Length: 427
Image (tube, rainbow, N blue to C red; front, side, top):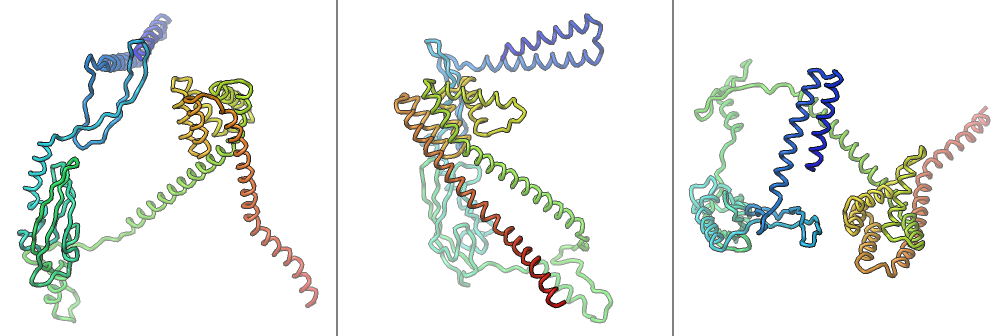
């Protein structure tokens, strides 16, 4: 990477020297050259710093993630004493709390539990509003699960039911505090009462307006200016035509987006069908090349390069399965191991046939090629049989689709025959 920066810098200098020597350099080109040089130097500095900080020293270590985070994958390049380099990925876990820290967090959570769940109630001995049964203590990693002995009176989310008797009822809540696998149970006994039913603003306004307008013959209907000491400011709700237009525009956009998604889904299904259609041909080609003495990698390379040559012809039509084979060969050429490249092929093609083929080729790398040709011949035979079965099913489907047009044409034929007959009969 550093070499690329150096080559780029040298190329910029040579270009600028050549332009200046020929007298073609102007102010704009100088600015562009200066901007490119500064960018290249900045990139070189960042790349150098990245390479400088890439080494982990004699006692290699990387920083763990914060508490509660998921484990993350870190990519490394490992050099062995024999001079072999390899890129590997290590799963680095997040930090974990120590036992004494867990105990401290659980104790703090129990201390603030009553305050947290109280909500708008004055105390837990007189609960007439919904409780705030949180699933996690605020500003704490401790999670909470709740249980109640009277779910018909107080729900698991803290909602107070309308079925609470007038004299009140005692309810037992059990909170299970959990942190990093450690749990602690807390029992709280509360007394719930029926919810206080407050009149809504609409009800209060309606009552005040009725009191204010006693004359039914009055031309105007006067609205209250204040409720419960709170001054009211009245405004008519404006016409919502603009909002409706916006809603219709949004619906049109959603419809367009849905259509685009449907088209993409149709393209995906078409791609999968084409990939599946080419599977027997690909397996048959592998059998033929392996039988001729080529290794699996060379056979795959031969198929990929032949397809690459066909892509240059004018009558070429892209075939997704061969595109994936070509990409797999390019992966192996770029340094990805043969086994990983086969696994990537199975994952990209998604079909069970390709996943089975990828598994077969990967096992061949581990156990040797003994019996591989026979297995591929069997797979090829089954694949061609499956393609014939699919062709029959598609033919039946096409016949069903043609049934309605045929019925319509039959109706037209009947009309052409019967209408002249009726006309001549009545004539």
